[in-house]
Picture (cartoon, rainbow, N blue to C red):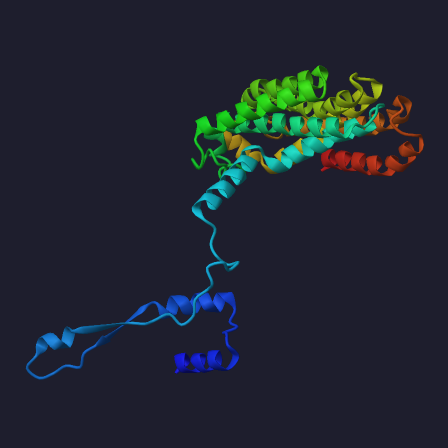
Length: 330
């Protein structure tokens, strides 16, 4: 009955205007096979189990060039590879690193040159990607014990350690060359120093001492220096104020993050203040919150901004300090 009505519709209007999903469902339904059991006959027991297979012809077909066609294996493989590289590089974290680098470039006293901006941004992003990939390469046994990191690619063996390390080497080499030849040597040296601090000091120190937080804060403070050096070729007082603000911000940021992850860090054997000394964790957060307020007040004296910035930022920094004080009281 359906085929007859469908045929009448085609005869009358010339085409079937069904949704793509309906066509796919009908295609699957129409190409299936229906089995009929033969009616039992007296004296022929074999006919009871006999089956007649009746294949059905397709009702409607999706055109081969339809938008709903599934991607080819090559396209799927290419997409998966790109997603894997984005996960290895911690793309969102790397994007934030590039943004802080570009803030240093924008505030430096120099001429903004678009090709140099592009080289500095891409080079910084590649160096950050390499550092994050090496970090995951070393921490597979520990990431598997934490709920936050147990689904990373290397933990699930989605990519091999050799593949991840090769990605890191290519990213670091390309990023370093872009910074050295496309920007200037000072920016490249800062990028390589940051890569070394993150992979060779911060990563192994996380399981040895709470000093890892101080080393990691230096890592987070270097990108604005890279952007400043990329624009002006030197590091003035303003660059160090920017780096100081970002350095101080790492403590309330990371201490709050690690406070909620204490069970995971303890299980994996990481030496974090929130695990080994909760009181120190609170006090350190308060101290560096106060440092953010003080450094923000110094910004006009380093020619980063005018004195109105101090008045405008004071309420926010004061509230931030109040929250830090509240963490100690509670």
